[in-house]
Length: 119
Image (cartoon, rainbow, N blue to C red; front, side, top):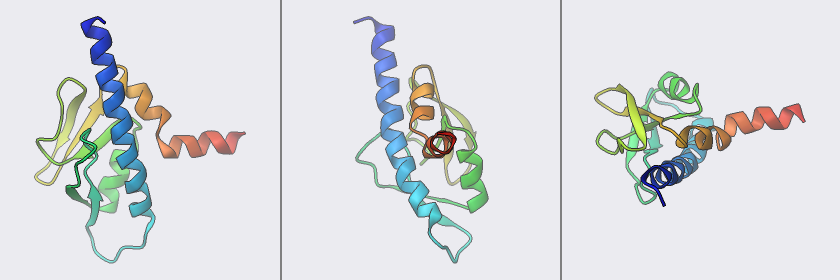
């Protein structure tokens, strides 16, 4: 297998793992909250990560506006599969690279809901 094909596989796997965390966070976001900050699960590619990230509702919605972006604990990003597009003192936002972008879009629960409504 070529280096490029292997990199694409790594990017696809990372996007699938991160999409699972996004699904969980969509459920957390849908619950009623009484504080300014909401604790979400880090959406990094490490399927065993259970670190928490504090975001406001508006910050969360800003990340969710694009299918190919995820929020992570700083230092959890993998430069080969994602690019940091925003960094704060509480979290970083990454955008998927290469083959990971279409995978992230395919598994975006908000995009799926729109596609299902059209049927």
